[in-house]
Length: 413
Ligand code: DWN
Image (cartoon, rainbow, N blue to C red):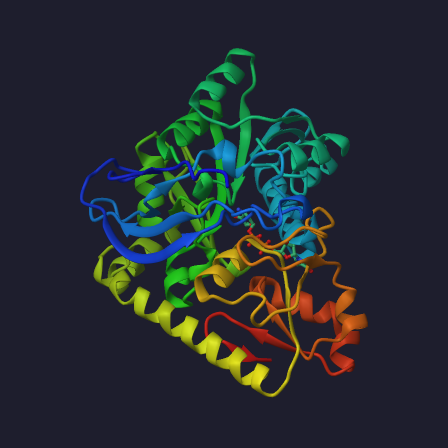
């Protein structure tokens, strides 16, 4: 077994304060995207503690454990954004709105941090805007390069930003979707954004909203890739420390509920900023008490899911799963659901097929297997895309297949 190498932080990743308060312990789990190849089956997988804490000083929610980024986003990192059509379409709409609003053209540069396989930058390129991707995961980055998206296969931080600026690279737009949460050193990352961004530029970032995580018990979106879980207060304070004022906030349904936040110098804040800040204060999102009961609700979801699957198995039902998602690793390993209930997982991402889910030794197949094998039920691990997934599986539905949605309350749909 590869020895788990990690550090446990006693100080807040955002403001550096001591006094972090734990409120959820998800036990020792394998890395969420550490799929297992046939050649490594049976070899004990590294498991890491996963503890979630709240910072009373800046209200940033974060995990205590830091796994080296090179371990998390290495050669075998399997996540390719383009296998989620909804995500690609969501990105197109986002980019087209920015291009129109900012009147971007061939003299402008859009930089994306964690640009993956070019799923988003392709839309800036189609609009005639210059693009530059930055992503440390070799697989997705190479896919972007093959699409003609210039991509630097590196981790972004203030040193890299300084190097780019010295080479004359200045960004008019910096996109960073679902990346901030992945950065163990938040301040060096945001300092880099501040250095790379033009004085009249904007940084537009999306990330899961901690309010949705708690309100909808989305505990499975907690894994070692996600070091932080943001409120508007926490992200405003973090970027504000680096001279990047928060100027707009939008609430989006994607990934179980996300925020899209825009930062920029020289622009007056949109009314949405104060609206979200005052709402967060009103509901107590900046107080520890908001999170205290969360662990109990997570335990309830675990018990409800096990009871539901026990009932289905007692009826002799066969059960598969859909979505070899990172969140699926947390859900299956924390709830103890694996080959004791499920026969296999299916996923459209060809880079995941013929590998095995971390920690539970479940094979990953092409979704076409649902039609040929016709399991009685399919547990949707990528529940954030359930509508899109079910719409694709009409042949399975017409053959009598049914779905189990695990979050926020396990139920057959
Ligand atoms: O932050 C992250 C989020 C944004 O994406 C990354 N660190 C890792 C990843 O997390 P995830 O794997 O939980 O994300 P998804 O996008 O919810 O995973 C969906 C999985 O389902 C992917 O493996 C693709 C697959 N899928 C599919 O097979 N058919 C997705 C759709 C929409 C489909 O139709």
